[in-house]
Length: 397
Ligand code: ADP
Ligand code: MG
Image (cartoon, rainbow, N blue to C red; front, side):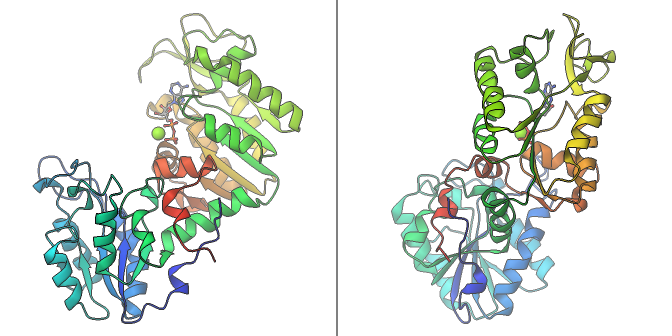
């Protein structure tokens, strides 16, 4: 996968109609329909402002929720247009269709420095089907395409991939940042490169595991997935999360690490509970002493010390997947300590994955991390080293 893509800085946007794919997939209040967090809108402002300040006619578009190809009033982007207008302090035109007549008319009357937002792309069934007709229609609204919706670059949709067949395609600032930091870490990491993996399941992380074991100097495994590894080592894991059919794979990963000289670290002690509940009884035991009817819900103190030590002196640390059931305060310590270890490490630190990113933010470490990748599924596929259609379609540098 080539991460070296042209950015909006490389485009001559003055007086041009720029079709800008944003991620305005904001959370809405179920009752009132109001936007409950405008974080994604705020994050999209640097690219929008850059374009407006450089005289572009900006035609922004996005999906919102899952309308399944039909108009759903509650998923209209009209409230986003209003919020954008408040944040930018300029009027924002809103087209009530997706690349239809109204869109076309409004796009053609835009002047340099003006902004138009189209209606929810997924109201059109062609969007998720990557329908070439829709891609062509969208493309016909503009002269340049800019992709800034990192959260959807792993999807080949009309507005994320198809459109690039008809317009010169560039990365916006959000996508550019993902490419330079995360792409840079995967391509040519500052070493030692430490990968920290956790989360619920081995099966969710097979791709990440196999990609990172080829690149990392140290691989740290915690979270629910660690128990399948402990089982593969012949340990009794009680009622802890186990994927029976992945025990073999865990064994292979350990073999591969050994053969490649990758240092593989697993928990040596764990915080266990007598049931899966926030108010369960808790104790910390060695991984050799997990009772039959208890389950591992977090890493223990000795493991925290071991994992923290392994992050010291690292050049790059990539983390995906919480170390425990951090949603239960009694079992959040491992995840919190890992976030702190990254924050204190002095390394280039990258967090990918929806829950890990949320945990780091919740726990107050976000501003001490080099980069928190904004796309849940997209970040994961990025870490898997897969070709992402929404990135592959952009012009190479
Ligand atoms: P990400 O979204 O960062 O990729 P995942 O979705 O893979 O992370 O995993 C997050 C989930 O893993 C959390 O909901 C957390 O409760 C769960 N988890 C972590 N450790 C354990 C464990 N020991 N047992 C059960 N679930 C766990
Ligand atoms: Mg998740």
